[in-house]
Length: 572
Image: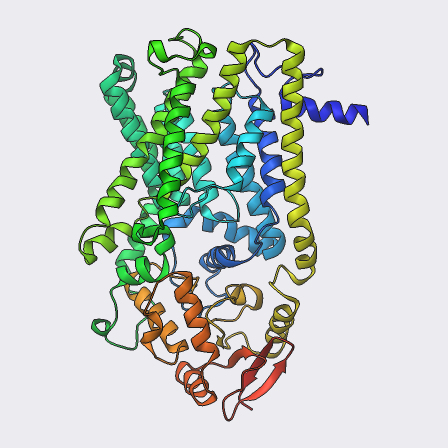
C-alpha cells in the first residue's frame, strides 16, 4: 500500500520519491506531466455524454464518409463535412472496425492522449510540476469556455484533435521550429478547418508582434522561416482544402421542395435560429458580459504577475527583481501574448454583429469567438499556476513546506478526479448495456426498428432527442434540430423539414432561437393532430412514424410497437 502511494506521488510530482518541492532546478518531466493530465481528463470526461448529441452526429458522419453504402439515403449523413476530413478518416475506420461503443471510447482516449501531450509542451516551459499541470487541466475542463459555449477536450469530436495540434504548433513556434510549426498548423486545419485557421491567424499575429518588438525574432524567422512555416501548413492542410473545394464545386445532394426565395437566408438559419449561443452577441445576457469583463481583467492581472510586467515601484515583494532571461517568465509572456492574439478575431466578430443582416450572418457563421472563448480560460488557469510557482520560488519556504504543498496539490487533483468518476460512472454503467442510448425505452424502440424494418426504411421521429437514431439503428432519419448541415441549400432543406414537423406552421420560429426554438418545435410536433401526422408521413415517404405513447396515431397507421414512452406507427 505504501509503495502504491509513493508511486502515485512520484507520478504527479515528476520526481522520484520522496515528494519533490513545487520549485526545482530540474525541469519537470513532459511524459509524467502528459500522463498526469491525461489521467485526470480521462477521469473527468471519458464517461460524459457518450454517443449523444454532437458525438453521435460526428461519428455517424465519419462512418458514412468511409462507407458510403452504410445509409445511402440519409440526407444529413450524405451532406459531408469535408472541413473535418482527417477526423473522419481516423474515427470512421475505428468505429467500422470496433463498433460505435468501444470505437467512440477509443477515439476519446486518443484525443485525450494527444491533447495531454500537447498541453504538457506548454506546462513544462512554465515550470509547472505534473501535479500542478494536472490541477490546471482539471479546473479548465470543468468550465472550458467564457461565454460562447466553446470547448477543447471532451467528446469524440474533431475539435479535441485540432486543438491538440494547435497547442503543438504553438510549442513549435516558441522553439522557433518553423517547419514543425507549419506541419502542426496544417494538421489542425485537416482535423477542423476553422479551429486550425484561427490558430494560424493567432500565431501569425504573435509573429507580427514579435517582429515589431524583437530583433531576435526578425533574425530567427526571416523569409526562410516564413517559407518553411507556410510550406508545412499547406502540405498538411491540403487534404482538408481539397475536400472543401470538392464540396464547394460539387452539386448538392439535396433539393428543397419550395423555392429558396420563400425561405429565410441560410445565414439567418445557421446563426440566429440554430447557433445563437455560439455566434450571436446580442443573445448574451448582462451576466455574460459581466463574466467576460471579470475574466479578462483577471487574465490581465495574472499575465502581468506571471510575466513580471509590473512597473518597478508597484512590483510585489514576492516577484523579486525582473529576470530578463528567466525561461519560465518568458514562457508566461509568450502564452499571454498568444491568448491576446486570439482576441482580435473575437473583436472583429463583435464589430460584425453591428453590420446589416446579410454580411453579419456571413461573418458570424465563421465562429469568430471560438478560439478566444476557450483559449482565454486555458491561458488563465495555466498562468495562475505559473504565478503560484513564481510566488513559492520567491517566498522560499523550506523544502519540507514545499513537499507538503505539493502533496496537497496531489490530494486536490485526486479528489477532483474521483469526484468526476463518482458523478459519471453510475450513468455510464447504466448506459453501457444499452449502448449509451438515453433511456431503456428508447433502446427498446431502437432494437425493434433494427429487427422489424428494412434498412432503407425512413424513420420520422420527434425533432430532438433522436440524434443517435441513424447511428443506433442503421436507418435513415428525417431531421433533427441538433444536426445541422453547412451548405446553403442543405440549410434551407433542414429548415423546411423542421417546419414540416410543426405542421408547416412557420410561426413556430417566432421568438428566440437556439434551444428555446427547439423546445417550441418539440411542443408543436407533440401537438399535431392525427390527420396532420398522417399527411406529414405520407408527404415525406416515411415507413415508420414515432410519437410519444400518449399521442394518437394517424388514420390508417397501426401501432406496430409501443412501450411506456414511445409508439412506432406503421401502415399495415
